[in-house]
Amino acid sequence: MGPLHYFLGIQVLRQPTSLVLSQQKYLEDLLRETNMLTSKPCATPMPTAPTLSKAMGSPHPHPEHYRQVLGSLQYLTLTRPDIAFSVNKLAQFMHSPTDIHWQAVKRLLRYLRGTASLGLTFTKRTRLEDEAAYTTGSLASHIGKPNPPLFTPRSYIAKYGDGIL
Image (tube, rainbow, N blue to C red; front, side, top):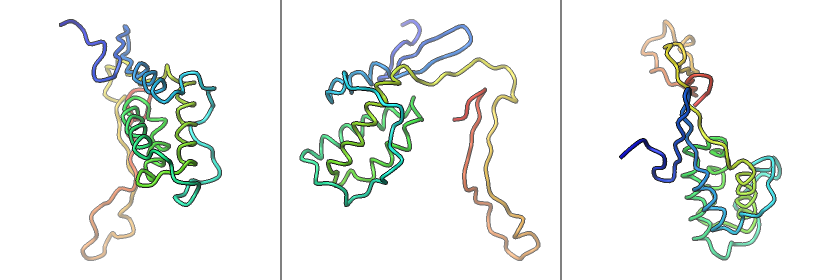
């Protein structure tokens, strides 16, 4: 069989001290399918204003196409966590997308066109200190009270090597 190079749309590049996972070919196929392969790249995945809402714009003429492209973008978040917020925000409008939502999808595709070579890099580590997990939350206000609630963390951060997952 040999070493793994490509599996389920994910390219695997082995280097002496790291492993790089990328979906560059998958992204190029998506850009080709959406006629965005020659689009002008942009620097950010979404604008900061105005905030998207379900009442914006007129209904998209092909909502199934919107859903299909968004599903492909969701799969792309496996190696591109930088677009996770944008994809999840756009997924809120899957039931009735509008032309404004489609414009936001196209902007995200333009961002991805300019950053197509990005992926996840895992570096070789031998020290256990390179992996850590942190959470927020506190039980201090419940100490000494009868039946304190169970600890419920509010957010998580996982660190692997020099990166945050």
